[in-house]
Length: 464
Image (cartoon, rainbow, N blue to C red; front, top):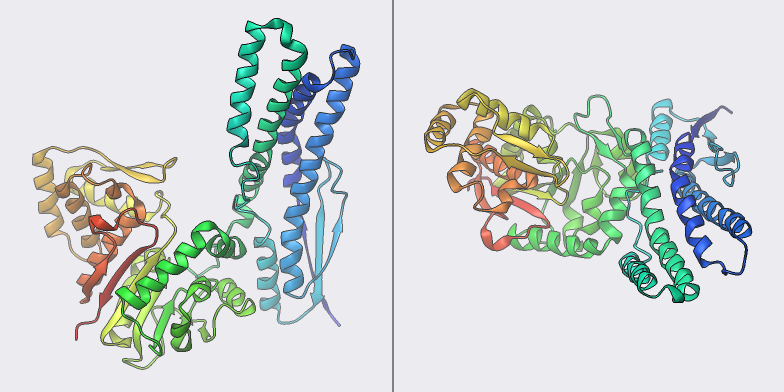
């Protein structure tokens, strides 16, 4: 019997070991002040050195072990046998994970291997073990330094206390720093994957599901989605609903139970569809393109997308809206849901700037990557009039971007801080596109009383 084998070599662990050296030195320095004063300087230094680098080695071991456990848990779930080569205790070793299973369909086996590879990264969802420890430790250490300068005679008591607080502060930051280094080393390899032809990036399914289901905001997301679907969109039990771009099936996990019997999912990316199938994140799942949906006319009461509509290319979105007009019954709802912010460096800013360059010969939208928001340049009253006039003349799919940019400036770009939020700017553009396609807007989250927005939504309907 043929065997399908592939390997994952964790070369990033060497970079993590180098990044751990400053922490090892900080542990050593803290331990030096904690050790009794009656010990000589040399013995204290050696003991502190051994303690510091030993403690850093423990954190390295835990980080590598946690990473491999995430791989192995998903691999075994998907039917692989696993073997680890290399010693995790060796800071300079590069562990290698070998996975094998009985060979099946080559395409499916390759997708399974990709799912295992994607499951290794932790998106920093680690709960804070010391939520206030670092702040308290920093203040206490600063107080100890102040007292030492004021009362040098208390050194025998204050120096160990200072060392203990410095150690506590460093420990409280270590796991977060190691997570950050792991993320930076592996972001391009594990955190996302784009299937040729899919047209959009899929992120680490396990990490996304963990964030949506187990974080403190998970319960809020489930409540808000239920209120939007059954309240604002007025979907009742037994409604025939089509979810487009269902991804890994996360929306299924948080759906109100009464909506599940009539729920149908469509997903083009084979990685996402396979993950959803194997993890039980759906009941009726079709691997289809949103521009070509082979369902009968008037088949659905609603078409819903979570992080879908604004992820599609303009051509795909236009195709989906045409399909929606055919598939929805009169009065049927089109529901856009979004719980993660857009990356401000995406196509939205580019398209807004393409229009502003044509209208005013300058780019109006800058990107603040640190705060994940847009920054708009100021314009004069004359330029505003020219911008509005150019927006009215714009045709085709670009008209939505032009009208939104002109509307934001007309309302006053500083009048509402939500004008800076990419997920809400994209929602405004979607709103324009849906109206242009012949849909009527029912409600959205753009009204001032709805802020702050956690789960963004836009609900339109096919005219009765």
